[in-house]
Length: 100
Image 1: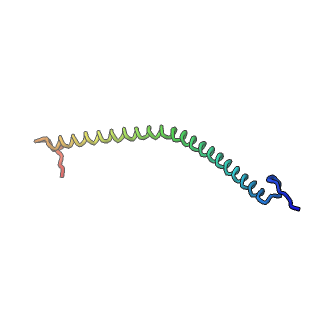
Image 2: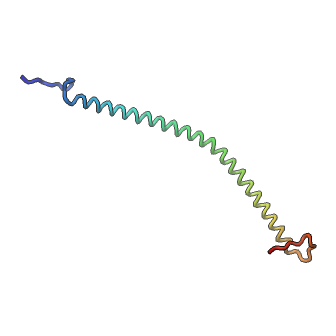
């Protein structure tokens, strides 16, 4: 007498393998969803931090640029004054400049 094995019977040889495969697939899907959520939260927090830090960084850059511009302007004025003093004929000794 032959024993018939139903597709859904627990004694079926491939049943344990398909249940494990289904469980692994489900675990993988849940893991991917959770990791996607964590990445979304992390990028959202980074964008907030970048926005807050970005504003201060631009303010610092503007201040540094302004200071550099002022230094450049002051140096140009000094260079201009030096050139004027070099070319003054018959200048008194305290105003004469010697450039080598």
